[in-house]
Amino acid sequence: MPSIRNKLGAAATGTLLTLGLALAPTAPAAAAADDTLRSAARGTGVRIGTAIDMTALAEDATYREIAGREFNTVTPENVMKWEAVEPTRGTYNWAPADQLVDFARSHGQKVRGHTLVWHSQNPSWLTEDAFTPAQLRRLLRQHILDEVGHFRGRIWAWDVANEVFNEDGTPRDTIWLRALGPGYIADAFRWAHQADPKAKLFLNDYNVEWLSPKSDAYYNLIIQLRRQGVPVHGFGMQGHLALQYGLPTTVLENVQRFDALGVQTAFTEVDIRMQLPADPIKVAAQAEGFGLLLRACLLVRNCVSYTVWGFTDKYSWVPGVFQGEGSATPYTEDYQPKPAYYTLRDTLRLAS
Ligand code: XIL
Image: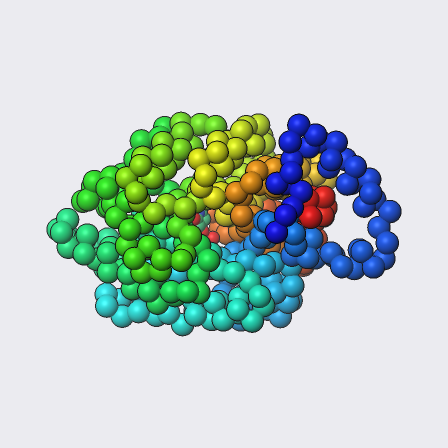
């Protein structure tokens, strides 16, 4: 599907400006046609997504309605993680994740699978027992083959390896690195590819949206993996930003360098938290941050999706994890769209 972002060159700013002006006097019909995020995203080549909280989806009709209406890709916030799918060794619980995949199918949404190898949210039987390296390797292989195999053909993209580097670009110390060495990452991608050859396979992390030692580490890893013929197809930047640290300035340059490698990119878990209480200037800065990441995605060729980590403050993970912070999503707790919502929609409209 040809889109404006494929044509962006030196005249990019002028083109967007002209387009913006052309769209400015919105005819009622045109406004109605793209009054959701997903309809505004049509024709941009970028899917707009959200993480889904399965309890909220089951219990909250407004949540369900907005999730189905506004987004064309979804990510399970927790239910595909290892501790959720295999709480007891050898006993799988696919039911909540299957429900998510069914919801997505019935709403014309693609699914981002999240996540296969990680240091966090692993079952205690896995982390507390003293397995040998050979046993751990077999367990990881089986986990990936079973999970990717279970969803084969129904997952658009998998976050295969999550958060594998430290801030300084050194490999993160995890049970996997300790037992198996850095080669576990290549193995994980090979196993995932074997189980579902059509799924797009991603690396994923936070604090990698801008130029830094950590994003350098991913850049170099992708070059190395591809040289070895490892099936890595994409780089996911989570996008968990916090206003008090300022908005990053080198996002576009960073996305462009991955784009130039020929891998897909995606913003996979965007939320922009602030120190509470929220006020109008923070809310405006937040909208700017959501727009900044989306623009970077729309300005390159191979950025395929932009996912928010929850669309409403009602169920956001932020207040439970970051003391005194919150208000990180595009809708308030009572489902009022914030400026961030309108910035996302207007930015998508400019590119469609
Ligand atoms: C978070 C979920 O939002 C929480 O509900 C859960 O308690 C912990 O994990 N990076 C990731 C996500 O890749 O899986 C994390 O999700 C947020 C940080």
